Image (cartoon, rainbow, N blue to C red; front, side):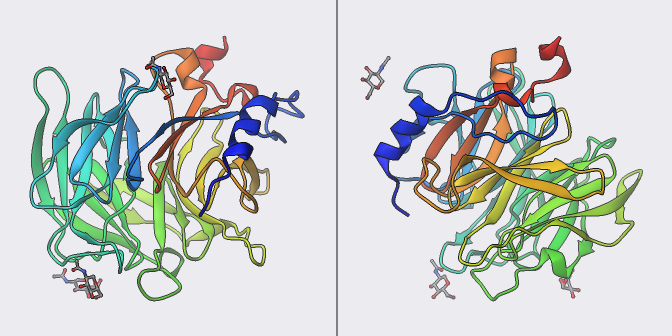
Length: 342
Ligand SMILES: *[C@@H]1O[C@H](CO)[C@@H](O)[C@H](O)[C@H]1NC(C)=O
Ligand SMILES: *[C@@H]1O[C@H](CO)[C@@H](O)[C@H](O)[C@H]1NC(C)=O
Ligand SMILES: *[C@@H]1O[C@H](CO)[C@@H](O)[C@H](O)[C@H]1NC(C)=O
């Protein structure tokens, strides 16, 4: 996909945020700024923002975890750690202060499936001294592990989605125990490889929200957490199905804001805001970039809010499969945390 530079620079100049229409529904486009373009177009996949505000970034085309400091001019991707026996990193998430779970594997870029036996889940510690990594589990019976989620109330567990098989695994980061907890048609790709099903997934309270890239849906399923065991407690609900004919609208990874709204990195070139409605559905709005025309965003894969200061908490960072790091200024959406609003 080609990116129009003239359009990009125009976006920066012209997008002064109009006033809010209401607290929950924001009909506007937020200013976006390209902070970094990898010279080789490195496929950036997932990220976690450190307490310091530095952004850890994974790539499906590299075994190296990178760090990006969004507060300095012309920041670049700094190498933090290279994981052994793999070619790709996918999901990364902070599950204890400055301690992360990272998924490593060897992915065949053509089929978008991992080589059998190549998938492992690691803990990666940045607290204190030098970074340290420990392989916790080898997930032998999975086709690919991509998105990763915390389990509210149990810091030892994470969930990871298999977009090839349409399953969600639970992984115990202390014991390495792992098992499939949900298998669902709403998580599976609707087409053979290289199509991908479940992509981003995040638990909010007892509900697991997840996107399905190939089906272009956003869904949720109720889970029950009983000690170290997570299990399914309801049917999958499709909350939103925006699938206009001829428009590629593949939801990728996403993040919640303090008001429960969901900010989604959407292929091929947009950020989508999903706002919960009183009837349980989600209102879908394009709030940065475009799904139909030229866009600054070229294949967004993940979105996370900044950390460390109130100014950072209002910035939504988006990475793309074409090596971009983009900052979206969401100040006009009042998405900051309560402490920053007061
Ligand atoms: C950042 O990059 C721009 C464009 O390449 C350059 O003009 C500018 O001098 C750089 N700024 C710093 C602080 O390096
Ligand atoms: C990726 O998979 C395709 C189709 O099975 C195969 O032809 C190709 O050799 C694989 N590539 C690598 C690097 O293994
Ligand atoms: C691997 O997964 C398949 C499909 O989910 C299942 O039928 C099979 O029992 C699993 N094998 C192992 C060793 O877990």
